Image (cartoon, rainbow, N blue to C red):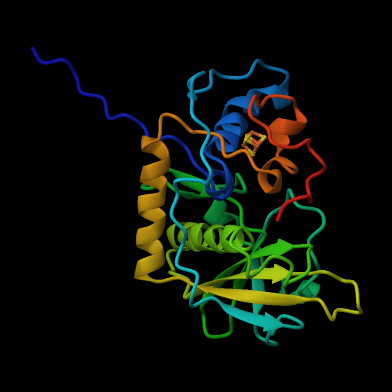
Length: 258
Ligand code: SF4
């Protein structure tokens, strides 16, 4: 008699895993294996072998970024737009809507707060999901930073673009509507709002393909090599915990990223 076959489950990944892998695969591995530390448990075994050769850059290729539309100033919300989802775990999000236009719907999160795409093994929480007047849904990720700091640098805002792409996919899966784009809102309040801005990240076939291939690439990588560089290591949480053997700089705080 044949033994029953088991289907290997996909390694659970989040938009944040994509961001950290794009910066440094070893950072993602240390984040993943260090998760139990938050609850007082021991860290899980790390995949990265002791004789790993550090890399100069992450092996993950960049998301399609050329068509992202950069806007200065306040986000252009219409009177008939409303909020259908907000990450309850984030307490520093801006108030974009008056109470009568906040209509959160827990059906889309199974009550857990996470948006889930079981087919890709992806789960996570956009900061918000906005329902536009035309029925379109748009995930929004909020960054309390200046719009143009690092935006055009090679190691700058591509991180935000790939996060927006992953959140579009989660909204598509959870709500059943494919967003045409995601928004990254930059909310630097200094200068009386003069530094605010937002980026519209298109979400189409090319972005969806990129996401699927990127997730497969991460799962197939059993090395998860370090990419030691000051721009990476200065804001790396496992570095703050003293868990990285390859750090190129001391930890300087969560905002010391390019
Ligand atoms: S300290 Fe640097 S090399 Fe080590 S995991 Fe963090 S980003 Fe990677």
